[in-house]
Image 1 (cartoon, rainbow, N blue to C red):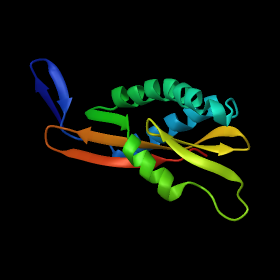
Image 2 (tube, rainbow, N blue to C red):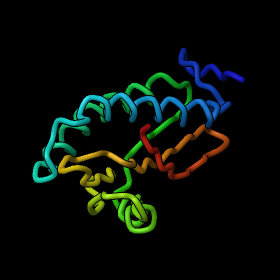
Image 3 (cartoon, rainbow, N blue to C red):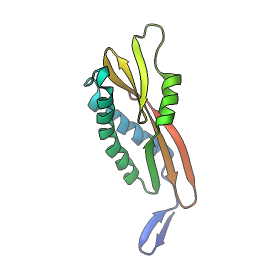
Image 4 (spheres, one colour):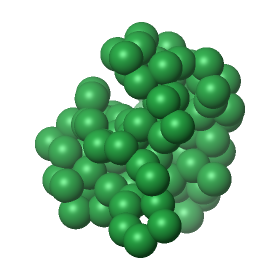
Length: 140
């Protein structure tokens, strides 16, 4: 349903949540591909900054491409919790520690910095409803 207000058209229907999450996952995947294999573990801060420089504009594009109010922000607190509980390890894995930085979880793998997850707060709002959730996006 669309409502016209003083020459502006706004929707009262939220965009499909699955569509927003899927597009966010695509944005994370593309940003990850741009930094994969380019940074040693000692350069993880630079890797995260490079990753964010690729991800942030993509998330802004996701927000603008959806009718209705969509807001996407990374969540550093949730990333820290995710890293503590879900960092890949175990038998036959030779991975190093996970570190959460600005909503991005990176891990040392073979001396390089690997992006293993991004925690994204998704807010979808219309004049009649609001949905808030945090999504853990794990690149392939």
